[in-house]
Image (cartoon, rainbow, N blue to C red):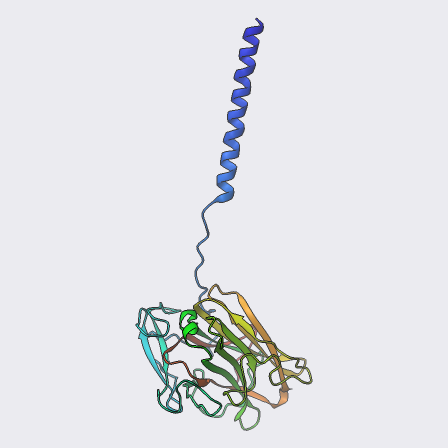
Length: 304
């Protein structure tokens, strides 16, 4: 009898052990799951009629050559020493920026270097624009940063501006620039800062306290970007307690903000509408860009 009880007890314990193991196995599988697959975030959807997005799927309309800096539409997989064979950020095409490879724009660069870059009036005609859109607006552009190329080409730079006009006559008021360059030490990293200046004679991406740094503005240290991919450069123009504030952000290929600064400027009654997006200095032959756009901020209204 005792023997039968012992056998029954052993069977019961075996069943319980199997049940527990089954539960644990199921729980472990559910917790592990499959690794998530992340895709690059698409540009934000337009929020009104007064919007613009140039994704270079058809042409390069509304982009213009400047100081011999040209723009060219190319397909995904385009072969180049810079960003060779990359997929476009949006769709199947992107644009490449080229500059004259002559004595005026060739490494080693100096303070006298003048490398031209194209510009865009951001979807409108290049005429005076004095109308500030109530609620403000945002401009954005995707730029491919090539870490492998950067490693072999130290201290190559570009400055990208989103500028605004003044009220009254609607002419140019100020440039707000991302100052970007490859690490001079050849690490393959990119260094980016934010200022009101462009060109080697006036600004260095690594400057820990670029202009402006007085009044409501404080020193804005540079940020180091690592890894190749499409980075989004955004300017947001808004009213901050009666002053123009420009939020400048860089998003990495996953869509996460990896650098951000704010520059405060004049009182809002002196501020007009958008002026242009411009590569004020562009030393990188075949720099890749895509998805250049202008969006009204939530709640903004287009000017009459």
